[in-house]
Length: 430
Image (cartoon, rainbow, N blue to C red; front, side, top):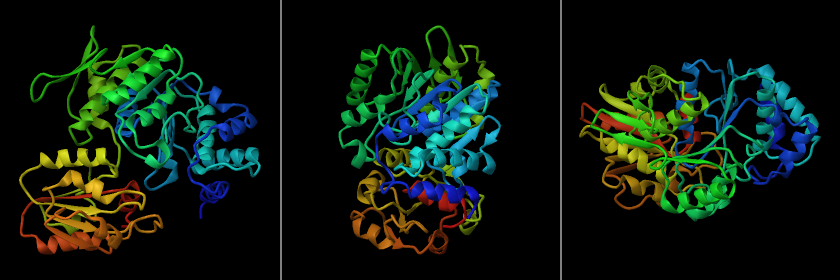
């Protein structure tokens, strides 16, 4: 176990629940540490159910192309915890992470503290000691009571599309979920609002009006215009930007890229050039979001001409996004390898893929005690979910089964259902 892993384990042991949404513990700890949250670069605070990670990735890439030094806080990680904390010169080092965690553990002095609260405060300490031009701060869960929501005066807030997720903590009604996400809105701080269902939009705009926060809403203050199959324009009124090649797959990424462009326009004072935008969009990276891993060792198990795609999507909205992308692929067989945590509903997720799947291969997530077993998944799969349904002991065995049973010279295998599963794939442990 590494030195940082030992400290992270000590944080895990400070609270009986992994998630406990309140801010009192965080405020107490920040006060003990001299309020690092007040010594941060200009902050862009991002909440939402879907697209917040991709939007962050596009925005980071554009700002870096424009010459800005950028810090990033995101979660969860896929392979290594250090992925969550990116300083101005790259991911946090082992020494920097240990130093920040030691300060948190010492200042906390054994008091109850959730893992996310402790690691968020450690990240804020690291950011406060690292000069940068901007910090992109992604919420972990919700917004109002999320540990990241201690920044009193961000430069900009962003809310990406809202749908149902984490219902045990945020509720099952869209309006209630939107109310939680809208908790990141601050008085007089501009809010950049992506496309929303009406119920969410009304709640968010009402909150912004109460706090006198200017709102830049897609479809109102700015627009995405599809002029033809190849021309997509982000129109801000007196200026506009085009969207060309995107590094991330899926038509839904157009909307995420558009939000990132508007945010970059604001953060740079409208001095950003189109070629910078183009390079930023084309160079963005966000693993496990329709990520093509055909050239990996796993991809080598499939016949030549087949594509292997990895996506960490686990809720209904993510399933619909994946399904829409699959619908546009060439007329060839689609197989799914599915693994999910036990708090997820496989039947609800699979409903989006009706009529699309030739094969459905169910597996447990390796080394994850809170995962459905393959048999659990099988017992919850709706009738007719796929032409062929089977249990797999590992990803490798699932891929070999697909290869052995197919006669097609092209096809697509999508691995999805959990970011935890995606992490095991990227680490080669699946």
